[in-house]
Image 1: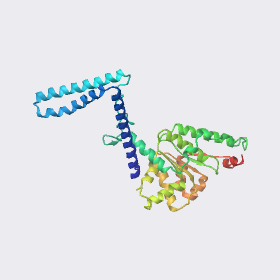
Image 2: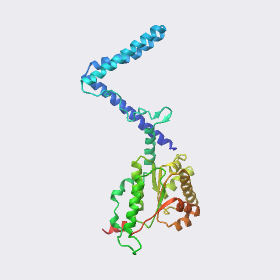
Image 3: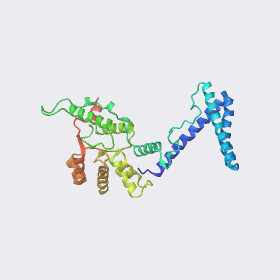
Image 4: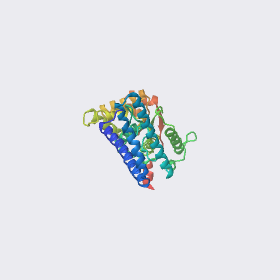
Length: 328
């Protein structure tokens, strides 16, 4: 994924701070151990000097150089063994004096060879998510606080389920979707009038998917289109990074489609998002107050046909929960 330069710089700063902190902590640990075991300093110096001495072998004959290097190797290993014995004497583990890096794979450099380490990639994802979702209330919604008792348990007819039963089915499906999510999961459209829990459940899915380590972008349709438009017409310095995040993130959640100011740009942007992510096999969740017919009328048949053909259609029913809460 392509990130803005500021994201890369911030990630590198975080990685460098991790390494500096780990090495500073290690210095403190060594000084503390030296204060309770003076012999440690002598053994450590002997270990360091054995490495420095090896350079003298350059001026020796091959036979003498090999013998000298072997002597320094034995000297170094002996010092290491003596340090281990000192640690054992004080009841400390053998790795007590080693640097405790956050990531033992790259030792907090952020790279394994010439490739970004997985820890560096995770930092980039977290920073990108936080930047892209600053206005999203992810922390305020979860499956645990979704209340089904707000939905009527009265069925409109004998052949139909009650709104509560229908919403129970949708709730359970959303929980299962979040629990089993991967990047090949099906896309979802959540439809229905205002105040029926579409945003709450889409946020709940997003929150759980993030906890599983996936890269999620959540925002309102209006905000997404605004950012894309600013980027497209050079009003930001992100150089296409936001569009890349929207098109390439593991899960994209577009909230309140239809509430945005409709223009030729938003229509084209929506089609590009849906089509690109569909071709890449990446899931998208859309919540909207619009019907499928209204989506076709507002955004063209090309968009509605892709949604109807590829998205799991969840139709929310019931009374406005926000209004019910206000009446309590």
